[in-house]
Image (cartoon, rainbow, N blue to C red):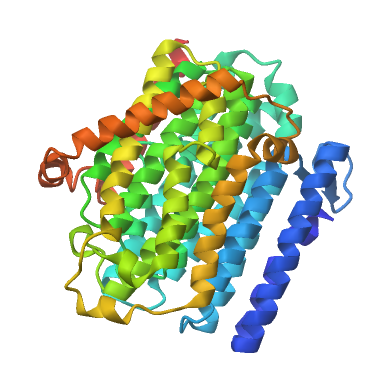
Length: 528
């Protein structure tokens, strides 16, 4: 049955290419609703039966192409179905060509294929299909700036994926396997000296897909493309980078401890801290949200590499949560920017007066991402820090404090008065408001029923210590208080003047950062 999860979005895409009228779009939305239900069914099946494996072509042993679903992949498939359902409804009234709708669902198929396949070459194919689709979505309006940014996105991803392609070629040379599980069995018997080159090649490409610093410029550039559909930047930040996190989990497990987790903890901490600093330095609301995503990816990386059960589950749960609240934030910010006809934060004011529903939805998402009590971010952050030592706890609190500062800056758009003439004609689009509000309510529901959601998604029955959660609330309250004190000083203006264009690399800069990252992993792996 797993093949249908890959094929169904393609069938929707072909249908919409020929029947992209209003009725056809409604039918596609209905099909996407059914796809969400199918994702829930897959999640329940994996929890009850463990792994579900489909042998495509019925070849025996490792010679066949296998699709595999477990709790982890099923959770990401369900997240993909939800985000694309939201994006489809959000884009319903936009005047987009048949090509846009066709590519949107091809993108969904590629991401689902990435989450379900365990074949090295299939991963390469799915990643490249997704890259080409995003590039075309960016460039199909033929605007000069969008064509340039789309080409930068395409070419830098091609460069990064070449590392992966050489890496899997080397894996095949030493193991004779293209199946991830079969290769892992062989790699476990090999000395580190035989696999560290393959490890460095593959993990460089995976780190690029994760948007870890200094490899995050591609995500930021796509988010800053003028007049690009809001759905593209939303899916990239809320979901597409989760493909990198998923691959990191799979490959890090397959290779074992070629490099200790401490290396990625350091990279994650640097990514998280610098990410919030650069987010605070932005004048463009979409860029600020993009850098905030980079910071949250760093936080997730810290948790995944701590070697603790609670931290790992918390990290994966935070990746799911991030997809939900970041989608709500991007959709909401996109609505406001389109209504005001500007993305400059200083010119976005008084949103509460013209758009109360979007304001409520945005605050639900903000409470989620900053880890406010009883929201989804608080549960995942509690699990991530439950077994952390003092140093790692300090890193997480620092990133969380930075996140609070980012969204104190973002929340300024909802208050005050505006002299923007366009804001007076704020559109009352009920479909878009329902999408943003629905995602915001999910942030609250995933917080109230956090333990149950973790059990449903991953099959882990984790407990929340009452006193430990109270301590987290106290730390959160203290962080908010500190943040409110800090914003009284001209910290935002100071950072905007000095760091606004930091890490905004061009093609050469991005390629150089990929090379530096590869060299660092290779040297460390060789020395260890």
